[in-house]
Image 1: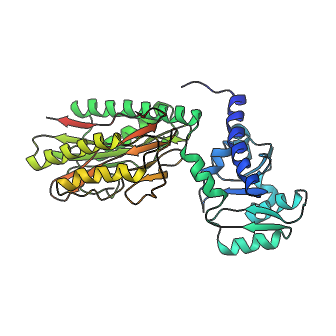
Image 2: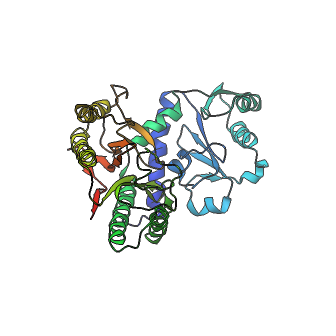
Image 3: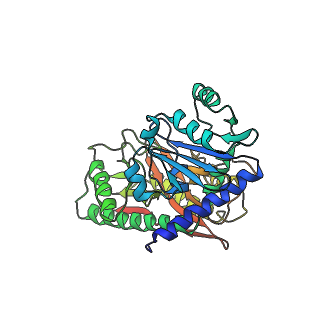
Length: 382
């Protein structure tokens, strides 16, 4: 992936804030507050200024912003904001920090500020008392909801980062298959730690989530618990591996199934159905097609075989592992695929006796159709 200069990164974040600020002006909102801390994580902080985590970002309707980071040194290295104020200046008190910045802005009638919908009610009341000149709004269907929709369509930088995460994930999958065949991976822990080590080797920040590695005795679970154990992996039968890697903040999300030894006819049928579902679903991952239609078409594949998939067909990925939109039969009919969305396609079937099969890849929606970014697969071991 190309190396971006500081000026290029600064422009990327400015363009995002400019687009968001236009929404604020159109809805007569003067300021939006974003808060990321140990109590409530919010990737919007990083999305709008590049600061990794732990901070308050105040975005004004003219698109300028004030960042109040917990770690000011980290902010100076990574963040792009017109003004950076150490959190220590406000005694590490979020309400004091937000109210100080708002009260310092030029007063004009009753100005409007939107704070995160997840703000606890007692804190909401404290903020109201601390900023009497402001109309404080804490609500659903707000500016923060607009950000969710905004983030669902990736810009060029986000697409490049996700493609790099996908490329690294593919290399890790190839390495896993080679090590299985050489007998170097024998347990769920072996494969989980291999992923952890390899993703760091290739320059990733971390895994996208705790790796899920389930041998044949546990692969019937949609998400196995514990995430991985010292149990055999892959054992004879059906084993599942679900993992992602994070590059420059953006995660991949893939699931592969290992079929080891001679399978029963019923196990082979599970594989056949999941592979057919993946091909069917991909045909509907195209712009302007309702998400619920793609999910329903896959459900039809399973229904004809008297099987049911117990989860949605996919979800958006980005700075978080689960983002809008969600591909499922109950998705709102007006929600359609749009160019720039990166969405998982992950049909799966699970049986207590036979084990589980899931096949998950990440798909970029394009103007002309789609591009499959990852290359997960069914790995067969004799």
